[in-house]
Length: 388
Image 1 (cartoon, rainbow, N blue to C red):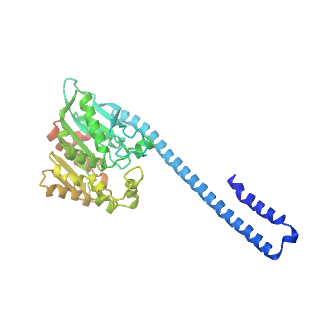
Image 2 (cartoon, rainbow, N blue to C red):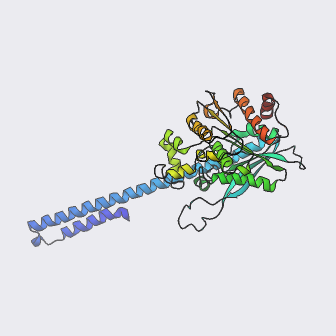
Image 3 (cartoon, rainbow, N blue to C red):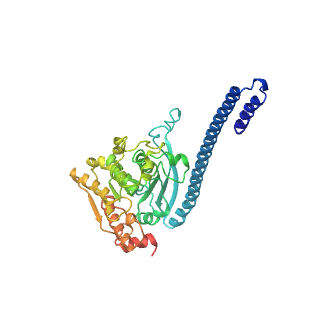
C-alpha cells in the first residue's frame, strides 16, 4: 500500500485540477492550482523516499542479524565436531565428560522489564579425569579457563591437557559466559573481567563438591591470555580457593590494552549487551575489571610469563602487572622471554623450545600441588603429550 501512496495522491491532485470549471480557471487560479500540485508532488516524493530508506534499513538490520545468527550456528557445529575430537585425542588416558553448571545472573539485565533477570546463567564445563585413578585416593585439580575475548575451550589445548593428565592431575575447564559454540545468548552474556571469574570459580567448586577423588588442599589455576587474566583475577580475589596460579601472557590492565589496540577491539566492550560505555565514559568500570587493580591482594604463589614479541598482549601490559605487584612488595615468580618464536602463543605451540618452557611451568605447579607422577624431564613430558 505504501508503494501506491505517491501515484494515488498525484492522481487526486491532477484530477482536481482537470475537473475545475473552465470559466473559473483564470490565470491566478491556474498558478495556485499548479503550485498546490507541485507542493503535493514534492511532499509525496519526500515521504516516499523516507519510507523507502526506512524499509531499506530494516532489511539491512534483518540481514545482518541473520548473518550473525548463521555465524553462531556454524560455531555450534564446529563445537560439536571439536567435542568429538576431545574424546578421540584423549581416549587412551582420560575419561572425558561435559557437564552443565550455573553461575551468577547477568551483571545487568538485557532488558529493563526482564522478569527472569535474576536467574543464574547456565554454562558448560569440560571434565578430564585420568583413567588410572584410584578411587580410594585424592588427586590435585587444575582449573584451566580458555583464552580469547569470544572463544572456547578447543583441542588447541589437547597436548597441554595430556601433559596434565599424565602427571595425575584432574582438569576442569569452564566455557564461561561469552564463549562461542553455544549460540547468540551465551555469546551476548559476555562479562569480560566480571562474572566470568565466578563461572570459573563455580567450576572449581563443582569438582570439589561432586568428586571425592579431588583434593581440596591441592587446587591450582592456570591460563593464557584471557585465561591468564582469569587466573590472575581468581588467585587475587579468591586466594583461599587456590594453592597457586600460573598466568601466561595475561591480559592485565584494560586501560593500557584499550589504548594500544584498534577501535574494533574496543567495540567488544562498548556493545549494548556488554558494558555499553567507553573507558572514557566509565573508567571505574574498566578498572574494576583489571587484574592490576588487585595486585595488592596477592597472597598465594604466582608465576607469570610474557614475551617481548607478543603481538596480542603486549609485553608492556604484562610488565605493568609485574610492576604493580612489586610496588606492593609481593613475592612471586615471573619471566620475560626475549623474542621467542610463536609470539603470543610462544609456550603453547608444539616446538621443542615451547615444550621446554612448558616443562618449567609444570615444575612450578609440582612444587605447590605435588602431582602423583611428576615429569622427570622435558623428554618425558613430550612423550606424554605426543606419544613419542
